[in-house]
Length: 212
Image (tube, rainbow, N blue to C red; front, side, top):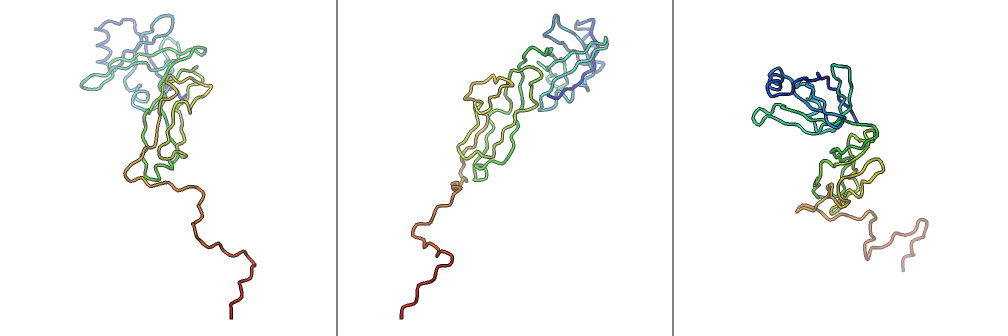
């Protein structure tokens, strides 16, 4: 999984007054959980743009001014209700030998056969929650929808892998092709012979002689 680096400064004071001063200075107060104790730090708001304003999933490398480097994932974020400015971010620390739960975006590729015939593609889940070791976290979950006909669907059971575990039931529908008013009946791949059609003469066969 792709990673984004955040350069932060460790916070000594975590009171309301200190937090307000940070925000006025264009800094975002953050807390990193999951380790021996919470780590309080702050970073410039612009540093989070590629992490927050994107549909993609990323891990984070937090580089603190004391020389410490920590791996993490975004856990929770709070926005101002009016201005949408970032008010606070919670991170969860990553460990190489410890599994982490994360929402991963679903990426569809190909052109569905059913859609070509007038069906409608419905995306039931644009993200799926998985549990995996940090090294096995994918950037996205890819699904080839090319073979899907009208009425077909893809469930979590179709996506099972040894690299990570889905935190959904196997029958959870990820995407499907539904029928519509303009849908046409799909033709079979093999053309059927037309009943009553005259079979062509074999190559080299002589035509019957005309009757006198």
